[in-house]
Image (cartoon, rainbow, N blue to C red; front, side, top):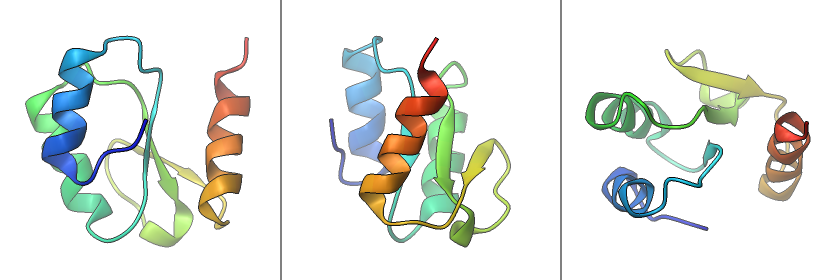
Length: 79
């Protein structure tokens, strides 16, 4: 599932509680993470590329293309 910005992500999180993780990509990762955490403290874990920097509440992933980041998150969620 993809969202175009923090507000869209929050809307999708509110409608679908089966989302296990959020991968933040693109510009404004820190702002999006802050908005998601503020509006939905119970949101699933947030992940982003280490390239985004040290962002409170966001788990860093190695710097990689988006598809590799999505695969890394999927592996982290495996039981």
